[in-house]
Amino acid sequence: MILFKKLNDLAIIPKVQTDGAAGFDLHCVEETSVWGGEVTKVMTGLACAIPDGYLGLIKPRSGLAAKWGINVLGGVIDSDYRGELIVLLTKHTAMPFDIHPGERIAQLIVVPCMNQCMEVGDLDSTTRGVNGFGSTGE
Image (cartoon, rainbow, N blue to C red):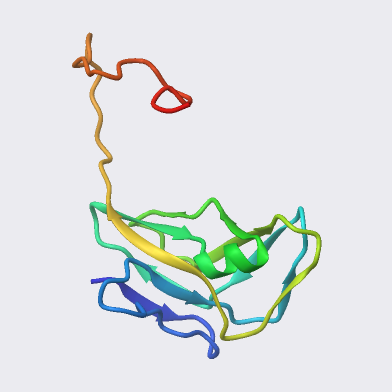
């Protein structure tokens, strides 16, 4: 279970929109605009506690991406972070996009996380091997 704390009276506790949805919708708490080619910090007014062994990923909402060219940058929330969730939005088209308090701006997806590693002399071999950057398609 993800625990959320309101840091602002306008904050909205996230929820998933359908039973099969993976992401908790994040809402903004202030009036702002996202301009083409710039990065805008958008405040959610929320802090959260993600369980140990998991991490939060702040991802774009598909509707904003498709209609307005809005994308999310960065967006890794560690399980020991307790500060405000801040969404970094960027826009790939020239027209500004205005955001109003209460609007859904991104989604938080919580996934398992490995944070231990070990050095080895050899890795197991796979069919793909070292081929990357388009090697599986044309």
